[in-house]
Image (cartoon, one colour):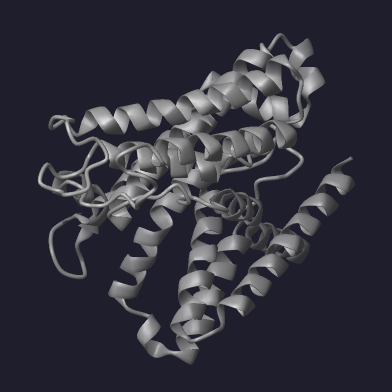
Length: 338
C-alpha cells in the first residue's frame, strides 16, 4: 500500500513538475520583492506571453514531428511589417502606401496570416518532397524571408524607416481590453487562449494530430501504416507558418509599429519554451499545457529577474542553463525508452 502511494506521488510530481517549478520561481522572486505578487504584474506578464505562446505552439507542431523550424522569428517579422504597412492612420505623415485606401481591418490581417502560411508550406514542401533536413530547410527560408522582408521594408517611400502611426482599431488588438483597471481582460490574452484551445483540439481530437504524433514517434512506421507523411508535413508546416503570421500581426499591434528586425531570435525562445514544457526534441511527445507552462516560465524569468534588478546577461546564462538541462533530461528519457 505504501509503495503504491509512493508511486502515485512520484507520478503526480513527474506529470506536474513544470508547474511546480513555475510556482517555486514565482515564490522565490516574491520573497526578494513582495511587490512582484500583484494583479498588474501578472497581467503584464500574460500580455508579454501571448505572442510568444502562439509562436511556441507553432514550433510545437514541428518539434512533435521530430523537426525544427528556424524561420519562425523571421516570419513573425515579415508578417508584422506586412500588416503594419497596410494599417496606418490616413493622416500619418510617413505612410508606407500613401495612396492606399482605408481597408477593412480583417483584410490586412488575413493577408499577413496567408503570407505566414505560404512560407510554412514552402518549408513543408522542401522537407517532405525534397527530403531536406528541417534544420537546413528552415535555416535557408529564415535567411530568404529576412532578405525579402528587408527589400519590402526598404521600398520607397518608406526607405527602411520604422513603420508607425498604426490605426486605433488595429492597435486595440494589442493593447485593448474588456473592462478597465487592473482586472481587465486584454484582447491579446484572450486571442492567445483561444488559439491554444484550437491547437489542443488539433493535437488531441483530429486525424492530423494523431498522424503528427505517429510521424514524430516513428516515421517509417507511419509510412507503413498508410499515413500520407508528405501531405501531413505540408499541413503541419503550413499551420505553424500561419500561427507565426498571427503572432506577427499581434506583435505589431502590441508594440504600435514594426521594422524588418522584428521577431529576431524569437524561434529560439519558442523552441526553448517547448522543450522545457516537455515537447521532446526526438519527436512524438508534447502537450499544449506543457508549452503554456514553458512560455510562462521564460516570461517569469525575463520579467521577474528584471523586476528584481538581475542583469540581463545573467538572465541569458540562466535561460541557457535551463535549456541545456531540459534537453539533457529529454535525451536521457529517449535513451532509456530505446
